[in-house]
Length: 140
Length: 109
Image (cartoon, rainbow over all chains, first blue to last red; front, side, top):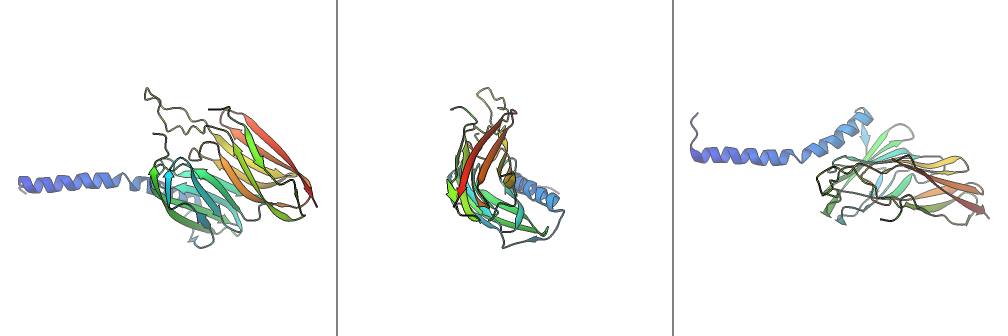
C-alpha cells in the first residue's frame, strides 16, 4: 500500500496519541490487578463502605481520607494513579466499633481512590471516589 | 526536620463503661517514600513507619500496615470502645528497626 505524506502524518500522530494514553491506564490496571489477586476474583459488593475524600485536593502531599465500613475486618486503600497503588491496610480488632479510620495520604495526580473491605462474613465490598489533585504529592 | 519518632496521642481522661471514644494519633516522621531523587539524581532510600498498632488492655483496636503513600507525620483518627478502666498502648514500627510507644490511661465513671 502506497502512503502519501498526508496519510503518513495521520498515522504517526495516531500512534503518538495511543502511546500517551497507554501510559495512564497502566497504573489503573496495577490497582485492579492487585484487587483481583486479593479477592481471587470474588464478587465485589457496593454500598457498605463510606469513603470520604475531598473533591479537589490542592496539595497532593496530604489528602485527608476517611473510610469506614461497619462489620469490616479489614479495609485496604488504593490510589490508582500512584506509582505504588496500595496506600494502607487497616485491620480492625474487637474494640473498634465503627471499623473506620481517618488519615492523610499522598496522591501523585488526579485519580480514583479505592477502598476495598473484607467483611466479617468473608464477602468483599468496594468503593471509589475521584480526587482532583492540583499539586502532585510524589516529591518529584 | 525535627526529630523523628515523637508521638502525640489524644485520648479522653475518662469515659462511661461501654462508651465509644475518639482517639487521635500523630507521629513525627519524614516518611521518605523511596520514589524521590536527590540533587544528583540518586533515589533517596525508603524510610517510613511501616506499622501502627493501638491496643487497650491487651485487646486490639486497630492494626495498620502503612505504605509510602501515607503522608509525612502519619496521622490516624479512629473510634474505640472502652469496656473498663485501663490503659491504651500505641506502637509505631520504623523501617530502621526503631519502635516507638505511647501509653494513655483512662478512668471509667
